[in-house]
Image 1: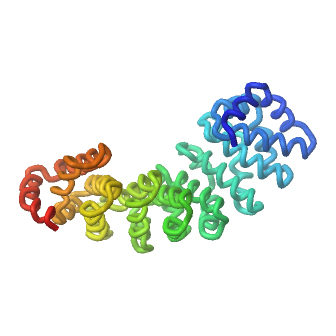
Image 2: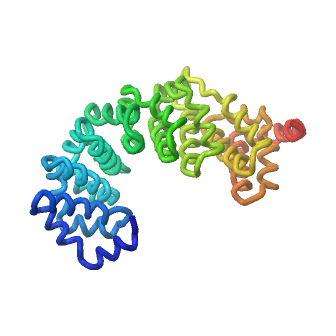
Image 3: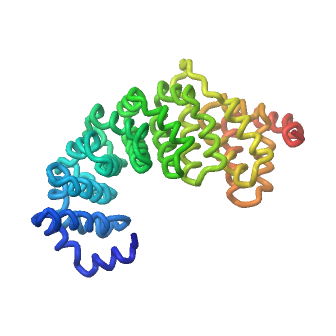
Length: 357
């Protein structure tokens, strides 16, 4: 796993003969050539482009469809690495990779399931045409099963892929919610490893977007507490996605909706950390408050009643670093834009109460 070595091997001209082995060789030679191309395409965009230009994609898809067990596994892995490239995604899809990858996802070995989920996740990344090309009934259920009962790597890849399928696609969000993905994703959010928590939060953020039924399920399944834990103490990637989830759950989709976002619970917790948390807690709480303030006016009202204005002003003026100050200022701007003249009146009324509490 060394980027410099990959680049050196490529410069020495290793890729064309490796692709030749993939096209026509004994099973053993073929298997290790596929494995080598997978390793060379990891974290190396130039190698991905060269491998595709040398004509590797079509034989790799054929191996996923009809190779030996090991060939299928490593071909799926290599296609997943190649699919980080936008042009390669299209080529892989046009070569018919989706159907055999889905077959591996459904009935392959444990390793085949992991790498087919990985490949399908990268194929569906930021490409709605490819998302729509996947048969939802065939793809989503086995992914949900991997999140629920798979190995740690399988859970991570399945969560990532579900998030990509849900991004910018209302039908996929509906189907993912109906297939029962929300509860196991929330469980992963609370008890998974760091990568699993990150991708579970990402998936939930995508699934919640513009989908009232999914938002209500998330709240009913107890998503708020693990989200708050990530917002305040997660990795940077986890915090970003957790704030996205909170914002998407809180956003008003339908003015006549009966769904009630637990604003008081969330905002009160954030306010507590804004008052007495660590420097990092204060900055992260301010970011979350800004996102919630952007979602709807009711959230702004809850923040003002809980004394957010003077606390955010203090953070913007006296924060210990630029991140804190900018976070406080951005949250204030959202409250100010939402309430206009009421902002000044509320600030004056609540300042001493909030600071003294």
